[in-house]
Image (cartoon, rainbow, N blue to C red; front, top):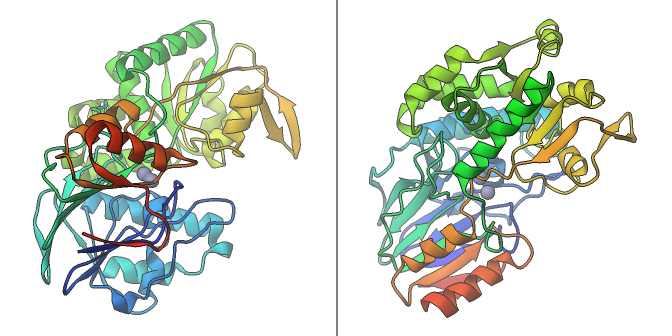
Length: 418
Ligand SMILES: [Zn+2]
Ligand SMILES: [Zn+2]
């Protein structure tokens, strides 16, 4: 088996890995780096591929895939939830960044025409290779990929072994492999205990709302918004709880088709019954008239209903903005966290509302990555990808020293033979 890295080496973004057996060529992910002007991974000709497997719908794993479908294109495998989510995110991506994207909706359509949905643990044969998807615990529908050919390989994709209110946590049963490709996002950073973080978050929501304020929780529409609604619902949060925009669309998708992908479906149903669904300008204004919590995208305040709400509460000392994920430098969310300022009409304006950052994550933290590496047999080949700065090197170093794994942070276009 041969592995060639076409992206996501030494950075988060452009996930793209080519696997070659004697007779078969499979591409794992084909993602972009979602900057203002998106970056694309190294080129590969679709005619050189037998299949594409998308681990999950995030654009850094799927955003370049339509490029492979200018013509008929290879067969595409993913979970049913990833396919549906991916379609929504690609449409949104084309709407917002279409000018910079070298494909159109037609290619997206072609791509889904070639797609086949796969269940977790359902073996799929592609010529002399068998693939299997395992729950990755990252977002609903996310998967790791096991490749069985002359050698056995595991690609974690983006993985979270920790159970959350929304997801069951990754299936980490397949550790008897010859090689593993592992993400390194938080190789250098430990996460706070999630239950502790939940408790702090809910307590602070109470504090603000009971003093008559509004808490705006900007959150990604895919997964994080629903998780925050689940947290507040499971803790019996008594006050008004609202959601808006694409978070509603995703909540309804998870309820309609997500039973096998969600940890606690009953809780999600309870969320849908108790949450105030906001649509349209009039309702948005009305929501701002009462104390309560509003959970909605965008997670870094780059557009979406959150960008509307934030302008209305920014000057209110009794209100608060609680960011609940990592904020990429250069985004409005990052400016808010670091300087307590908002960009309004091209000017940086100080914010009077309280600003807090709760670091909920959908990736394994340092402790979980290390535990995962410890579960492989000594001598297993390890490739560390999907990490900014020196995170991939740091994780590979740790794996070599502490677990006697044959670990390396690969470089772009390098081919490794197993
Ligand atoms: Zn992801
Ligand atoms: Zn990713």
